[in-house]
Image (cartoon, rainbow, N blue to C red; front, side):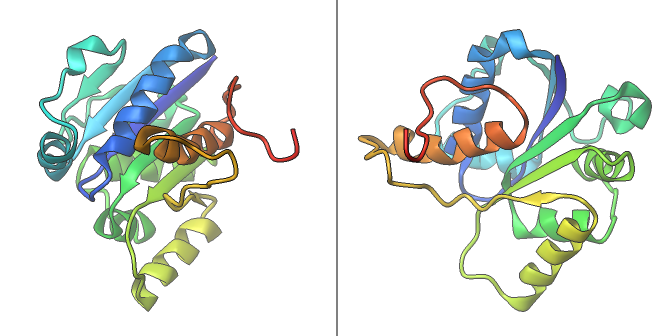
Length: 186
């Protein structure tokens, strides 16, 4: 049973986050706790890209990004995975340089220092050398960079299915067992 932090940062791609939350709801038998935290810009983008949020429909605990009393602000709570989806380049930079000025960056710092799984679903293009170096720094610290780059092998038929190919990869990286995800050669 996993304990997972889902952080939603302010880059475009709120639909990725919604699909992730929807799929985590379906996989409820595989996790013990899910804590969700959003940046202020993430909420703005959610409203622009997805619509009015109905977070009360999710079986997760939602935390304010300034709440350093959230359980995953400490390694003693033993959250084993953190997913930042989508991850803006600004959030990537703060994580890569160890700036812990809010709950998202503090939780990422905790996950890295505890040698647990940090997955950053970066959503930006094109990249400059600063972005690439920040990705390198996070990778060297033990994090996983998973660009929000969909696959088309399975001939997805809708935007949700296309974006779902990225979310399925993220859930695989988090160690969750998926049914119905496209598998090469199967």
